Image (cartoon, rainbow, N blue to C red; front, side):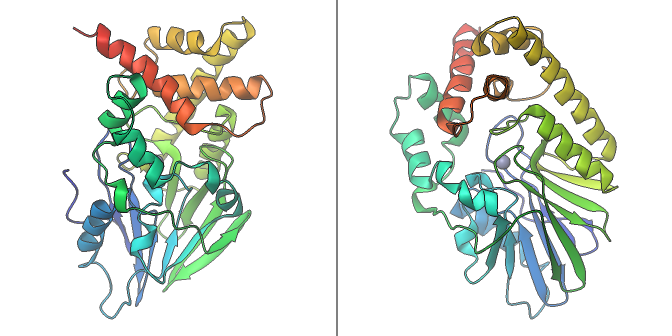
Length: 322
Ligand SMILES: [Zn+2]
């Protein structure tokens, strides 16, 4: 696995571990905040080898005398942002109360290991899981829940750096937060934003993702760190809001016409909607989630079942490909 062996400077006291593999799942950005003898980390990688690579890359940047990373902020509780939490013993782990309350719906490392090893490889979900998640080492990962939770807004200081945590969920997940660094004019968006790939959102609806993007723009940042992919400009975020609104219109029109969700997604994909972006099958998940809202369904979304629908579409295309 080709992982960065150095952090990229983003602004004074901010360094990004950016494993920029687009077109697949699981490579999340992690932002290290350092000032004086203190350090905090926004999100942790998906498995132990990746987290160890991040720790090695961070070593030259960590202040002399720093005891290590004192605080972890989890933008949300998907495993690709949290499974590395356990490698920072003694750090407080901060997330929203809604994230902590919905942790139970997240596939555990053991379930991810089963999905990538125990399912039939010639069936859509087993094939897709191996294709996109088979590279990760879930067998020695663990779920380490937050130790500090909040609702609405939570401020912390890392040395001299002011850090504002702002709850914007439910959007991508039940309890998303964004990290605002006002002096540096940087926002860490978590999975409210994806760059270069189609996004995936488990909670939605799309209007709430767009609203979270508007919240980010209202903070007037210069640099926006998405959950996955290269850093973004405010114009990139505005363009993404256009993407969300266009998709919303396409999905709502099909729902109003009585088209079933799966057919609606396949139809939208057939129109070539933003087909220069990777992971087109995520449109299947976005459409299914939007339909849940339009149908007034309020039970917990089943993440694996949603992923299985996307896998079905991708598997069908794989067979159709020359
Ligand atoms: Zn993610």
